[in-house]
Length: 296
Image (cartoon, rainbow, N blue to C red; front, side, top):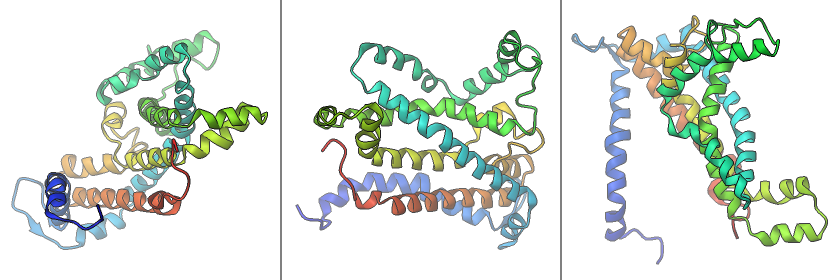
């Protein structure tokens, strides 16, 4: 077939290009333009150039939001990746009981972020929450821990709830990858006397290399855009303990009515996501497909 682009190939990719241009590229270019405006979204706009960018980079609030976003990113990967990997590999087994367990594991995928936020806010309520009641019955704690109102705990609790929501999705990725691994590899390992852990680290994990990279990219870039669940749970509080960049962008643009500053943060988020994806793919060798293909 060759790699030369002819009119048939351009015709096939045209819908994707148009979709990307209209819903991704054009809005981003508009955000870059708005970042140079002093505008509240209603009155006449005033062009201020790079003044908004200078305000953001000299703002302690923006730097704080950037640090929190980095913390959420790292915590999300540390929590979600190993659990998703183990659950996905477990569900890839052929035993019937694993399929039954899978039904319960994937329940969080059925709910919206708003529903999850409201549910967990009731569960974690310090006055009548289920979690405190359970811990009190086990004689753990005082029974009135303010999980979402404690500045030292709020970000960790929110990150764990986010992990609870998205672990099923990443488990599906690992489950699909694990099912493509040839049985002959495991049969050979069994003949050689390999135990479960040897088999996992010598066969399963290497064969899931590209699934791991794909999942990691989704976790890391997705961490940049967490907003709806945080908005419902804490609204960025207590104080600014959970005000990540996406939340700060919303507050600047729609609460403080400063469209220019909000657009600067939107551009930073988009650029950070692109750079993070490129670096991850480049340094892991994913784009060169250096190691064996899954299922080969």
